[in-house]
Every structure is written in C-alpha cells, then in structure tokens.
Length: 328
Image (cartoon, one colour):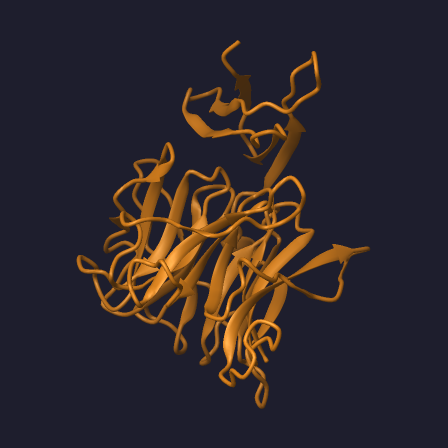
C-alpha cells in the first residue's frame, strides 16, 4: 500500500493521510482496481496508534485524496475525482465537517468559482480558515499545474488568483502547505532548480503581500526521488512528508526535525467556548485577532454553530488583542 499526503491538526494529536489500496469490499463488491481513501491516527503517549478508516460519506467508491485539515481538526478539505455532482469529470475540491455527534457531514463541492472543467487538487487551508491554496491546470497559469489562492467571502469563495512567477514555473507546482504562521508556504516543484522529480521548497510572504524567491530545502530532505505532501508542525520543529526514497518499498510517510534555517515562525494556540450565561448553550460568535502594533486584522472567524467552540492559532513574537462579539 501507498501512504502519502499527511496533514496534521495544530495540537499535533491527529494526523490524516491518503492510502492507495485495494477497494473496500463493503462499499464496492466486485471492484478490482486500486483506489485512494482517507485514514487517520491519533497520538497516545507520544506514539501514533493504529490507523482508522475514515469511512463514508467522505470515502466513497471514487478516489479521495490530498486532504487539508483545519486547525481545530473539525473540517477537511480534499480532492475527489469523478465524484457525482462535480463540476467536471476531472478532479474537484470538496469540504466536510465533523458534527456535534462526531460524524462527518456529506461533503460539499466548493462551487464553480473554485472548481472548473479542469482539475483542481491539493487544497491547503490557512489556520484561520479564510484562505485556501490549491493546485490547478486551468487556463491562465504559468505551466502544467500551478498554485492558486482563493479567499472566503461569507459563504462563498472569491475568484482564485494565480500566485504568479514568484512561485509558479512552466513546470509542475503542487502540494502547497501554508503554515499557521500565515507567511511560510511550502510546496513541491519540478520547475525550480532541484535534485529530482519533485523537490520541496519554501517561500515566505513579504510585508507587501508578495512572495520571496523559493528556497530548496536541500539534501537529505530532497532526493532524486519525488518528495511531496510536506507539512510542518505548529511549533515549527517537526515536519512530515511522503517519499519513495527506500528502494524496494512503496511511498511512505516520514517525519524529521526541521533545520533551523527553513523553520516557520513558531505558533501557539488558544481554544475556548462562547456560550449564553443563562442557559449554557453554545453561541455562534465572531472572534478576531488583532495585531496591537499595526492594528491589522490577523484572523477573523466564527465559533462553531450550536457548540460555541473556537480554536485560534497565535503566531509568536507579537502582542494581540482578542475580541469576541455577537449581537445582543
């Protein structure tokens, strides 16, 4: 079996990943082809315990893969190809959420602003849930597959923007990962100078909103094989990715300690619950994180409907105001 595309919750206690394996006989009797499905594992006592099949309605008899998990681990953005109800017969992006009972909701297609008749793959959701990076071969790009970005506007997503020449090349850029520090972008490319089929690079967001020239993470992280699906822990000291570097084995997931020079800013987090003091019921309130030095809005989101839970990542080295509000 092939295991790849790891994604990690901010508290580093849950890892989701994609597995290419024989079809599930309970879902697809008689089907013989390999297909991709999601699994997850939780950490107990510092050790990953046995993986668990995510199951329907997220997993189906079509391919699901290349997922991204929100900071609180309660929502998954993922790629699905040839799924009924998609924008095309190619690959589209979908989202599903864990409900109050711990069950996954039916996945929702992200719509025709994000998805086209071309392929959209490899979503990467920012820690505040407002920005989504992804890979697509749609017209208007620089090469085969480029990295694009869309921003949440209420219940919808904005028209995607190509990240431009600072990131994209005439080659293939894929598997973006935006760290919770919201300024360190890791991705795989065969267009920038590298060691093999696809290397991992880092680019950092400048204060003017542009990206600096990508830096190859170098050997031994990159090899002549293909490295992809790169993610970094919130604290910035550990990384996870998939590679087929071991001769005679399939693609596996590896972890390692990040070199100091390519680490993101370390990030902490706060979690809590907004509720009505009269009846203790959870409230869907607006919460904002504001940089006290610049006055800039760093993050804006809402607490979970009905539950009132919120989860906010905090890039280090800055003083913040944390504001929670709701009419009435």
